[in-house]
Image 1 (cartoon, one colour):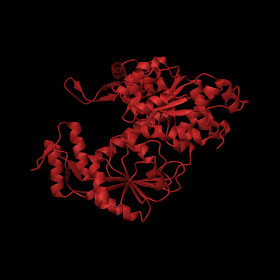
Image 2 (cartoon, rainbow, N blue to C red):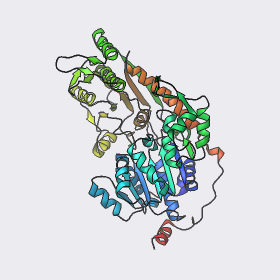
Image 3 (tube, rainbow, N blue to C red):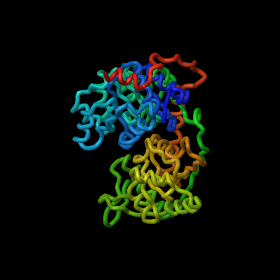
Image 4 (cartoon, helix red, strand yellow):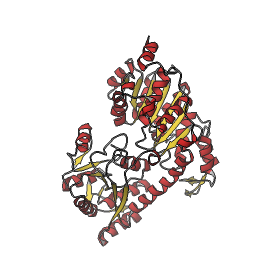
Amino acid sequence: MKLNRDDLHEFQNYGVDFIINKPISALMLECGLGKTITTLTAVSDLMYDYFEISKVLIIAPLRVGLTVWKQECDKWEQLKYLRCSIAIGSVSEREKALQADADIYIINRENVEWLVKNYPFDFDMVVVDELSSFKSHQSKRFRALRKVRPKLDRIVGLTGTPAPNGLMDLWAEINLLDMGERLGRYITRYRDEYFKPDKRNGAIVYSYKPLPDAEERIYGKISDICVSMKAADYLEMPERVDNIVEVGMSDKETAMYKRLEKEMILPFADGDIDAVNAASLSNKLLQLANGAVYDENGKVKKIHSRKLDALEDLIEAANGKPVLVYYSYKHDRDRISERFNAREIKDDKDISEWNTGKIQLAIAHPASCGHGLNLQSGGSTIVWFGLTWSLELYQQANARLYRQGQKNTVVVHHIITKGTVDEKVMTALKNKDIGQASLMEAIKWHCKDVQTNEVRLLRSKSAEQRIEEVRD
């Protein structure tokens, strides 16, 4: 397809100009707003209109890096000249890709540390797809990229979920972009200025709570380099219905749950179910709410089938329509597969057959298909068999079906076991979304606020002419 700036939506053109005009930028765009085409258009203009860059690194989730970015270049006639080299795979495959003559080099985020350690970091521009995956300042990927950040003239962060767990996540993401200019160079200073201790045990602080004016002050600090856009403001989104399906355990099953919750152990003759700390306990309780738990030997203890029964009812109620089920644990997947004729979404063939209506019941882990995949053609019903604490995974997974191009009302079912941690997860997801929504609103861009952009220099020349001038 032919692509010109006139073919882009007005909000996409604004995003292109935002990247071009700001060496440091963060586009917080919800799914479906075209962050990939927006970024690639900006890269094209910077490379072949303004001659400011010649070598770009894109850091992306694995599956997105393998397919989405290059596919988008190949899709549009005006971007086909952007030569992409995918540095993903074995060490030899990565090395070969990095040595290729290209404009854009694409690597998965897990290999950022390897790249920094083994290659001269000579990129003019870095694009971090899903910036929120760098929210931990202690992660190896953050430390590696932060080490070479001073070498970069331009950096772009892309995400739809900038603060999935609250405002504390923002420090590392913004620090990676501006090297501490806005929120401070050190996480401790950021904590002291905008937060106060919340949950603690003596001198040990487990969590922090934002000060009353923290949101406003933080948003004011970062608003010059960040812009947010919500899909519902610019796209014709399908109707969405969220449904809670409650199931209850028997008295015996409830007693087992309560004992595990209180004593952190359930004794069995062939292997106990035990939790060594609070995080492990939460994990075990979520498993038990789903109906099965791994014991100390890694074997599965089946406790109940309440959620399987509810899932059966939902599948029957779908009346032959395709259903996409999100599971949390391998034993969830195995038990669902044992009971139903389900197909797991794992590769491009699965995606294609789902989108062409050949799969009636699909199962997937939200972490494996949470980013970049278009599944809206295959169905409009989602069932959360097992819940996730991660707002990012939750929103991204739902966006596989709830996005532009979906022709039917999207129904999102959540199977909740009453009286369990499931209820707390749903409350947490709702509360985190409220906090993140206020961030997105604070830095939201509105079309009416921006005047028509001036016509760019060199626009009269064709893309082919500009490319030949640069490469000659």
